[in-house]
Image 1 (cartoon, rainbow, N blue to C red):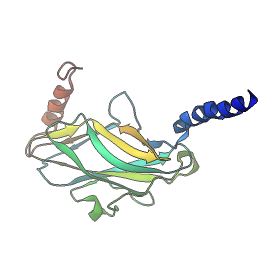
Image 2 (cartoon, rainbow, N blue to C red; image 1 turned 90 degrees about the vertical axis):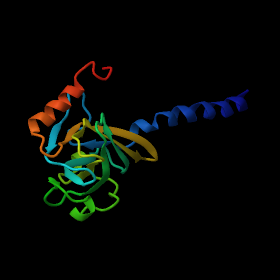
Image 3 (cartoon, helix red, strand yellow; image 1 turned 180 degrees about the horizontal axis):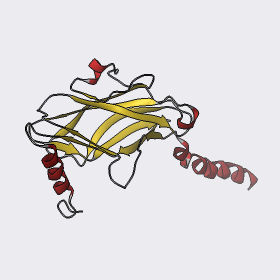
Image 4 (tube, rainbow, N blue to C red; image 1 turned 120 degrees about the horizontal axis):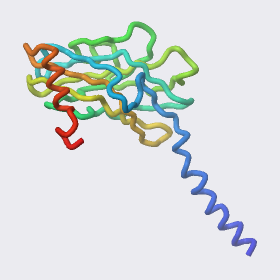
Length: 193
């Protein structure tokens, strides 16, 4: 009976000890973070046209504990009219941050593939800058309520939502009309909310 107990006990303890390990993986934190109180900011770009890159940056990323996180994809949240995230990247925040520009991220000093985020939020004032390159497939106004960032940390897949509303307004459309059109699309009941 003792031999059976010695054999069964490790089999019971092993899954119990490893099943919660994901809770201790480093988690990616993006300035503004994930929230339910609406967007952390709104970017409205005027006179945007199809197939042109619109790069935005200036947001800090860091980890909630020591480790490493690698971003694998960035997808728009609640997109309308074919807005796309054409590219994403990151770089150490050591100088002026990117605001916005009508150039690809690679022409603005960002690597084609952003390095892993390793900075711990509370251990350093220098974080990692997140940059996103948007575009649209037609000249109509397009937008998204934010982006869902997928990343790997300690070999596990995680996501974090960054609630930054981005509107790419049609050529000649006044900013107020562009924003109002998007607000009408978000009104409760229009899409099953």
